[in-house]
Each structure stands twice: as C-alpha cells, then as structure tokens.
Length: 448
Image (cartoon, one colour):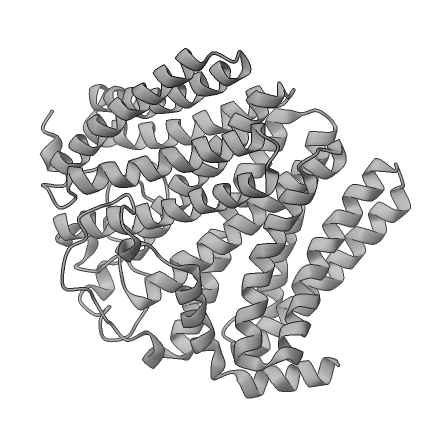
C-alpha cells in the first residue's frame, strides 16, 4: 500500500473518500462570493465533527471507567463506533488491508488510555507509566504516518507536539476527575474538544492542498469556513455538555455542579460577546433566552427525579415556547434567510434528542441513550452550516477571502498560532451580526 497517495479523508457520508460531482456546477466560482458550501468546507466540518466527538467520548468513557458505571460499556461502544466509521471509510477507498492498519493504529491509542484508567483504579504506578510510554510510541508512529501520507505537508515534528497536547488533555482531565478537582477536569475536557477542531483545520488544509482537483480548487481555511467550523464546535459542545449534565443531575453526581458550570461557560462566552456589540440590555436578553432553554432541560431532569409527570410536561411546553421564540428571533436577525418554521423543526429535533437520550439513560437502555447522544452531537453541525451560510450571504464583505500564504505544518494544533481561539471567532461571528443591530434591537424592544 502506498500511503503517499492520500490521507484519511472522512466525508459527510462516512463512506466516500472525496466528493465527486456534487459541486461540479459551481467549480471555480467559490472565490467570487464567500460561501460555507464547498467540498473543502464540508471536509473540514466533518473532520471537526468526528475528531471532536472522539475527544468528547474518550473523556466521558474514561470517567465512566473510573466510576465503574453501568453505562461504561455503552459509552465505550459509542467511542468504538466513532472508530469504525473512520475505518469503514478507509476500507472503502484503500481496501480491507489498509482499513485494518488504520483500525489497529487508532484502536491501540484508545486502548492505551483504557490501560491508564485500569492502572489508576488498581493504583499501579508502573502500569500507568507503561500506558504513557505506549502513548509516546503511538505519538511518534502516527505522526510519521501522517507526514508520509500528506507528502510532508504536515511535518512529523509538529504533529508530535499536537498529539502530545491531545494526550495531556485527556490524561489531565481524567487525573483531575479522579482527584476530585471537577472544575479543572471539565475545563480540560473543553480544551480537548476545542483542540480537535484545530486538528481538523490543519488536516483539511493539507488534504485540499494535496488533492485540489478533488475539491474543485476550494480551500478549507477561509473566513466563511472558520465561521462554520466554530459554530459547529460551540453548538456540538453545548449538546455534549448538556447531555452529561443531565446524567449527572439525575444521578446526583459529585461533579454535577462542575459540568453545569462548563455548560454555563459556553453560554457566558456568547453572552459576553453579544453584550460587547449590542450592549448590556441585548446581552441580558440573549442570556435569558439561551439560559432559559437550558433551565427547561434541568427542570425536566428534576421532574423526572421527583416522578412528577405534570412538571415534566410543563418543562416540555416551555421548550416548545422557546423554540418558537428563538426561531422567530433568528428569522428576523437574518432578514428571512432562515425561516422560522424550518428552524423550529430543527430545534425540536435537538429537544427530542436530548430528552430521548436522557429518558433512555434513566430507563437503563444505555445503548439507545448513547445512540441518541451521537445523533444529538452530529445534529448540531446542521444548524452550524445553516447559520453560517445565512450570515455569509447576508454580509459577504465581512467574509472576503483572506488566505494564509504558508501551508500549516501541523494537523494537530501543535502551536498557539495554529489554534482557533474562540474569542477571535466569536468576534468574527458578531462582526457579521453587528449590521443586524438595528433589526435585532427592534426585535428585543418589541419583546420587552
């Protein structure tokens, strides 16, 4: 097998290496007007989805292992499904032998994390060090593999730094959890999730540079795709943290407050940015709207614990009102580019997925629960695409092409310059939204 022919490329279908004719009609026109709908942007979004999901599920599975939780096997199964999706894509392109090689490399490094969890439980320091040594070997092997696969567009030396960051984040989150420092544990989990979107940025940039004709000469790193990627990151993180917070709430877990705090930080970052553009009143309105729907989920959890069916129904009714109000708000802000009825339908899917995952968890149907977890995480990349598409269409000048001159040398977020700081991206998002200030202020004043 000649690995120089390509890299693991995971499309939205998880079954094809490269896009074929879906974007053939607008070949060569993507740079005339900014758009989030390009083959390269799709690749970056998909890699961001799968890689960040890997980090999210790995952290949660390690915690479940430490707890000896009943849903550990289902959580581990969800993590394995993530691996199998990647393996299936590789096999469909390179054949069974290549797929088996990829599966071995990827599964091994997950296994080394599991070894570390087991060694921690048995207080075996020697076994913990052996697991870390194995991860060190994996880091070197996988970085060389990727350097070769990308024709040295990604350099092994930088890749190893990024891989070490990934290892440190997962091990650090787990160690903090075991030590009872839950706030730090969740902060490191959020770092691990965000880091993998930097990985997707580097990988997709290298891949599209390597195979430009396969991606209709579109680029993975543009202001528009940055926006789409970041919205995917923040929205999927919201879904992931919401689901774990609901589980912790019904279980009465010691880390419930820390998980709720991590979820709130996701909201606070958005609120602070909106306040900086629209002022404190608008920021408070947004915080009230967004926090309100999170509170409705908490109320559902509390009602479930109290076996209060009337309170559960009340929480669901409040969520129904939220999706109607928020959908109308977004339609107004985007000047009709997003339709409230379609938005409401998508928000209902989000509600159904989170409530469904929680109900299955409380009924001890853990396989169904984690199926819903994965569906909810993946679903958030759809509104990310829709929102970013509406913003770039509404304010094309805000997303004019501004490309880096050098190919990134790491696909693993190995240096600070190659990360996607949330603050920077939020500023970009809000810059695009600033022009809707008058419309949104009128909407807020009307609702006040």
